[in-house]
Image 1 (cartoon, rainbow, N blue to C red):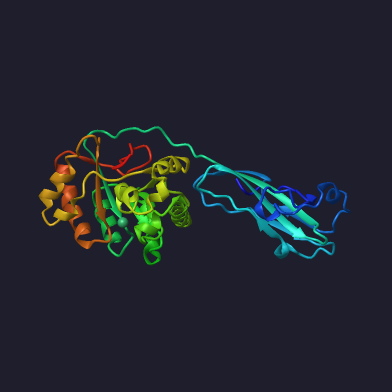
Image 2 (tube, helix red, strand yellow):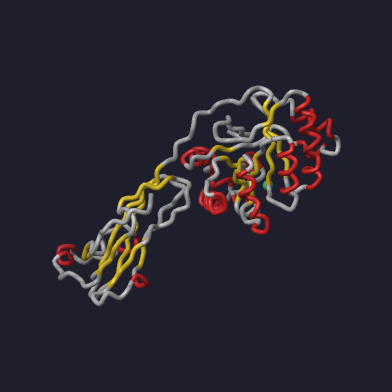
Length: 332
Ligand SMILES: [Zn+2]
């Protein structure tokens, strides 16, 4: 997507109005005069396509550029860049790369980045009796033990990670390799007021988490769980600056679906029978059970084996969430 080199140089002797960007809006030099100016001795070359289609939700990485003067010296460090795509918002974003010469003249190149929506697969409800175990806030020091238990029973689960838990991230490749789903909880489990202040705060955090997931596994996540759940997200001060209802559409553009939970057994994990009874009787209108636990809570991790044994004995099946599962939302 971003590797094909394209010669683009020396693109233009340029006027300050080339970009629609703010930095040039005030300049009033007549464009004709600039175009007739003698060619510069600087070469400016963009790497990658001058017109780039970028999947929404993937952290933007510019393919880059290079510049040389007449003597062949690398002047890339002197090139300035104006404009930056908002990778979580579908739209067209111009980027101007420029190098001031003299008298208001520029050597410049322009790239247009089209941030385009990702496609989501059709939703397919899982068979009745499906339980999705989900674990928030990890990874943590008990995650490896949890993975051992899950492997023993060949149960696949879903991990909604907190991506700045750098001490434990080395386990992410194992989670993925063993067939579990890596989803995103957030990058930084900071105050909800901060996280849900507006779309930019929330989505910037989300993309930072996506980068971590990709760095460790080579893949991006397609399922997300709001810290505190969607009810918290929609009720809190800020509440995405009144834009909460837009968030599901933005997530869909990013190729993501959001999952709250139907059962929260941790309040009764000391009573395993009570726990499993809770989580195997999903309430209407949900078609399957989504169980909220935390792999950072040792008592919860250590209750999992009994829960699995009980549920398998009763004929239930376990599945890892993926974006084909119907979304679970507390709030619409
Ligand atoms: Zn959490």
